[in-house]
Image 1: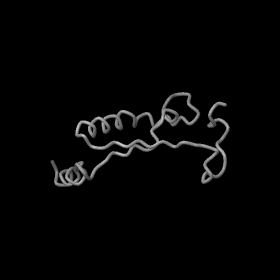
Image 2: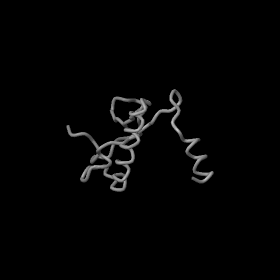
Image 3: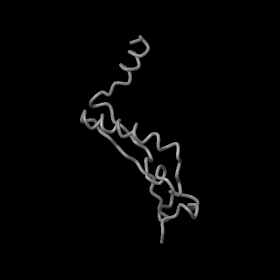
Image 4: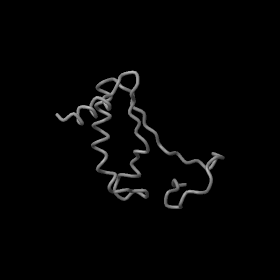
Length: 89
C-alpha cells in the first residue's frame, strides 16, 4: 500500500462517536426508469450507497437519510413545481 493510500485510509476511516453517513435525496423518483425526475446515471450510485449503508450499520454507526418534500403550505418555498413533478391529485 502506498503512503498516499494509507494516509487516505487513515483520514477517511469512520470514527465511532464522530462519524455518520448522510444520504441526500436518494429517492426512487431519481433512479427508477420512467419516473418524472429520472436521472439514469444516478442508478450506478445505488449499489455503492447500499454498500456504505451496510458498512455503517454493521459498525453501528449512524445513517441519516434526507428527502426533499414539497408542500404548497410551506411559506419559505418560492415558485411552483413543474406540472410533471406535482403529486397526483
